Length: 123
Image (tube, rainbow, N blue to C red; front, side, top):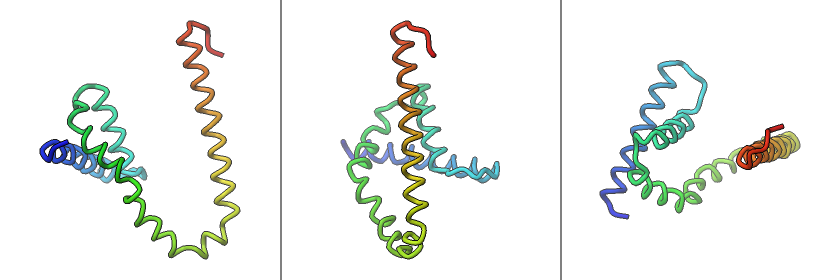
């Protein structure tokens, strides 16, 4: 991991973020530009347009420092403790229900993928 690789990776990630902000603003979408940037990065990596080595070092560094990146959000939550307490039941119900939906959906797709890999017919 050297400075040159980190700078190149950062430049690629920032460029993708900039492009995704332009796309969202130009089309008037109600879609997070950061999520669009990640989708663009995934597509470009899968198509081989961007080599993994270009962004690997900066992504590894960002993952290592991820906890620190959540600190401002955690501090921001402290400003809204009363609102969170007032809506605690709805918040926790939403978290539990959506987690179960995600778990069941993931399990279903995994089962289908494993059946297709073995040559069995899907459900």
